[in-house]
Image (cartoon, rainbow, N blue to C red; front, side, top):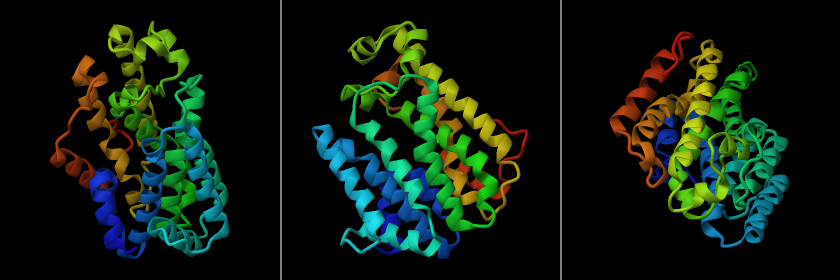
Amino acid sequence: MSASELLGRLRAIEPDRYLSLLYAPEAAREDVAALYAFDAEVASIRERVHEALPGEIRIQWWRDTLAAGEPTGSPVADALIDAVGRHGLPLAGFAQYLDARIADLYDDPMPDIETLEAYCGATSSTLMQMAAMVLDPAAAPRAAEAAGHGGCAEAITRLVWSLPRHRARGQCHIPAGMLAAAGTSVEEFLSETPGEGGLRAARMMIALAREHFGKFSASAAGISAALRPAFLPVAVCPLRLDAAERAGALLLMQSPRVSPLGRQWRIWRAAVRGWPASRAG
């Protein structure tokens, strides 16, 4: 699959990542796009299966495919295998990522915030760090802290944005301890009337995403221009979180909307200016 085909696929399903790729060097664009397309494929497994076991079989297929490193006929898998070979991307990172994605197949809430952050780190942060390795392997290790917090900010923002879809299928990623602190339960949160407790839990998730974005901004201040494209999707997090906060109780029923121009401007600003240490949003 060519870079233009991968970009075309991402433009529809991952608009923030698609925009960020436009600022990546052309030589690296296809391989970073392969990482994002892989993530989109695996993240959508839950949507395409009715039970957890077939989902686990699909995740195992990715494990076996990456371990073998041979063409499969799957455009996304073959593009990813090529990217892994060109850049020496660590298979252990992909294994950690796939292990974490098993949680998507089940309806159990995260037991605590630490487990949620570990899930975000194994998925979004791992992907961010690998994109940095593609862009500048020498500088990438110095961006590990930024990838950690940036991945958490992006992943939790995605979970907030997906609350209506997840609730509709009986799934809750909000930590059990956070639900209890909000005065609600999994059953009540997933009901047709989640009430004030459900909204408080959602706002706690928003606050956690903002906390990680603030830490990301501080740690990303020294990121080189060469690495910026790997982190540009994080720039949209405050815009999406603001929209989620304004939505109030509707946030639990339908995903908010943000201006495409607003998203483009946030990404452009970060691509040009980076993340000054004093910036928090």
